[in-house]
Image 1 (spheres, rainbow, N blue to C red):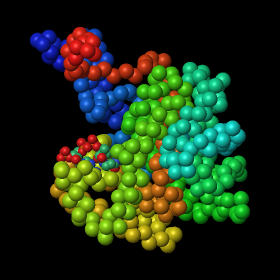
Image 2: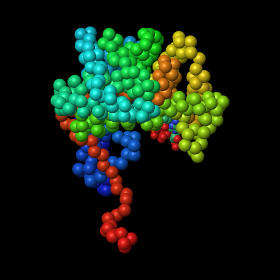
Image 3: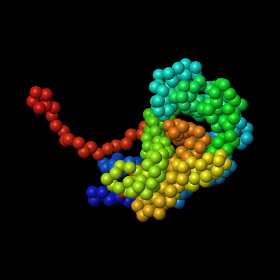
Image 4: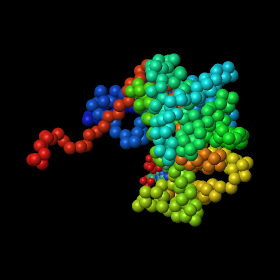
Length: 428
Ligand code: ACO
């Protein structure tokens, strides 16, 4: 007999099914709660709420485990490439050679954007944040593919996925070129995903651009580590928007906006700005640790803490080592890395951080690598979005292909004024 959970409410007993995940996670299925009891659950910020069953990513915050389609992040980081991980997340298995070649071909041959779309960049002010440009441009793609963006049509889904994965690096690189007043560089089919992105970012027509293989490898690794993270804020946004059957571009553009905030993907920019600020103030890590602990201060140690990881973030471990390696190999001495290490050491031995299980997250070290490889600070969150693209796509695809999918629509408990009658303005 399958396991159930009992609820006694207003003197009546109810039974609900218990669902157990592959890795032993348990959930009480309350789908029939309101119909049977008249009550809803209230779960501020969805701390205890599973919004879906998913086959894509497993995350164990207590033990610092992250699996994409069952494969540990450490193994993918060591042996795979970003494009292969993208295939894995979206289609659910590691591709055979020919399948992968075909996928790579599709992505390579969709990298150009419509020439008219380039003119939209002129409407953005020079110092517009590239996340604003990215989300606008991604949403605008739906205007260019009106005839092939029906989420319920399998062929439309496939081509939209290829277009989105392929065009995002072009759109992102163009927003950078626009911000520095340099000409847009067309994509090149002879280059791989990372090489092509870096070429569009940093080459100029006047001279040849040569990409350091250390930089290429480091960037590929960062993209892999950011590729999916189950039902976080931006992914839940993509699913929620997509559940209304808005097209893929519209759903993903909403996810980009959700990622932008400093409590989510925007943290990578905030971390570097914080480290720079500490550096400018003389490098006194202790002062900033004290501020982060002070309940009268709104200051938080950016890059520390995570809603789910309460032990360590496995991605942060890999990135920390990569940051050390990249800086060493490239012969860079970054004072911000030294401050980051001082902060980490101080915070990890401080009871405030220990008791609250606050550890460095993925964003704490990623910015150090981005800086070292020449990515400007305001592009950091765009880099995160590039990495997260296959995850958002996979989660959207899983949802939209589920025949029992319903529109996402949470409920609420109303605590406002009780019913009252309208008073004409002269009588108020
Ligand atoms: N610095 C100082 N104190 C912190 C920090 C921090 N970075 N993070 C959490 N705390 C404290 C809180 O003040 C709270 O203390 P209290 O119990 O005394 O009130 C306690 O730790 C729990 O924090 P919550 O905010 O309740 O934890 P929540 O799960 O809601 O937040 C979050 C997680 C948003 C990541 C938070 O830790 C944070 O703001 N970190 C800094 C921003 C950041 O790095 N975000 C990136 C997250 S990773 C990602 O999105 C890719």
